[in-house]
Image (tube, rainbow over all chains, first blue to last red; front, side, top):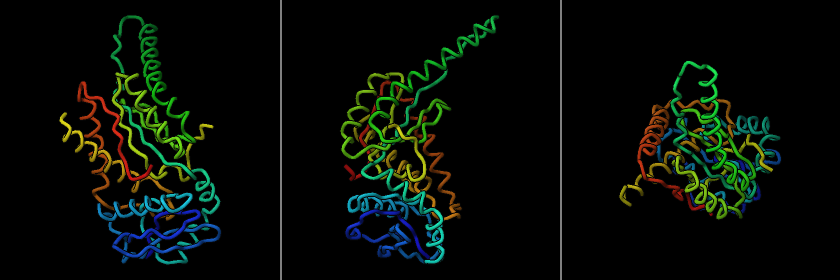
Length: 217
Length: 71
């Protein structure tokens, strides 16, 4: 069985680490695309060790190639033919994804605290609706104050989810050259939005931009 | 929150975010991606609980620099 770590571009040497189940990494070419894989005994068991090893391999690949499109940790392929068919079927999409993430990492942001203010339901239905609308606008402005400065520094964002449940989540695809500027921007927007608690993590390999993402340019 | 507690929380958030990325993001190459593992659900439960607890910490405001050995 074959476990896939990701699609790579201009990979130098393979990283000097082993993959899931401590198996050696191997390169596999399918048409114009190159993948990094390793053999696994059966259906790769989803243990914390396996997940962390997958993640470690992807990070190491980031250091020795010009672009990495991380693969989702999924059920392994039965053999070369199955892998080749699956990759060939998505080759255009994968090539586009590689091009999108080249030179970039991603940051994740969660903003907590977008709680709706209780609106007093008086006798005026119009007044009630207006108050609801104003509260909705207030929450949208809170999100914009955090999101827009960060989106401006990003090549793409995904998925800018709605503020359901009082949480705004977004992932930002940031050029490596702008990582410090992005961190600075996070540290500036946080004190500017005291109503919100921000949790920002990264930089990560661009896991969230393989096949989607909204370009900000 | 004391610095060791804050550090532990950051580690937890980092691990949860990492596991979420590896299992739920990334390009889907196989058409058969379903993972029949109870732990996957626990990741989400854990994350929701964590976010609730973070939200409830009044006066604690953080934008931790977490993550990896990447730049």
